Image (cartoon, rainbow, N blue to C red):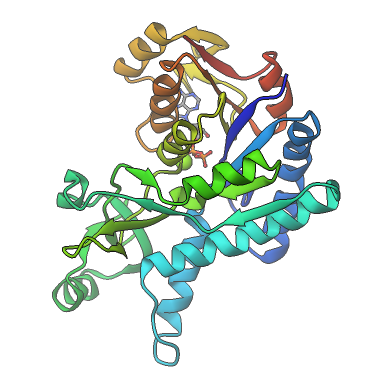
Length: 308
Ligand code: ADP
Ligand code: MG
């Protein structure tokens, strides 16, 4: 049966830990990802692909930093849209080569956030270059950046990670899905924009969690399935310990209990489980699995599934 699926690709779908981030690295990973993704499309499902962009936007920020004497520095929303553009291109090329009869297109996507979101009061997400303490104080004074120490490696700019309120291009995405177009959208959680004092949309320096944005998008396009593809085959309780236990099909109540007990780390599995629990509460299917198990997980024979 044909399903509408929102698929969130983890960072490893584009860049593996330890890789430098060359074009060749990224293309090779995307080719592997496209093998899994094209199987879902061939099975006849409607598909929106959301992807991460952390390392890619990091590289663009670094390029800006290094070239600032010669080329004007661009703000974070511009860097974010650049990363959506090139990742979208690579996915389009790899998918089109596998499915010449299908239309595949990327929508540069803005995600609206609220400037009153309390996340803006205490930015937590480190982005861009590392600085010394002295440089970091200067940047805080000159640019008003909030700076923070990052795991003993130096100082970095911190930006807010607000909740996604709305996917601005949602109607475009729905129209494309109705016309059987495979859509790449909301990359990196979307380009963060907010209504300014005049009520006009304007880019803001923020990073939106891609799993939260994938949930927002799943709700807004009324998808049947939210599928989060990452680098582990399942979600576990007591993860990384001797008594770790694989979760296959679990109830919303159990998932909430484990969540509250702290089994899912804040910056990684936490937001994925939070998104899946909320989606499952709508009576829909929420799955977390490895990229390579996507088709099996959709059929219910792999991955972790939260059932309502
Ligand atoms: P992505 O780029 O796919 O968003 P993340 O690194 O953010 O990837 O999240 C996936 C990681 O979450 C896994 O590699 C794993 O190390 C970590 N993780 C934390 N808690 C758990 C858990 N309970 N079960 C499985 N993985 C977990
Ligand atoms: Mg992540």
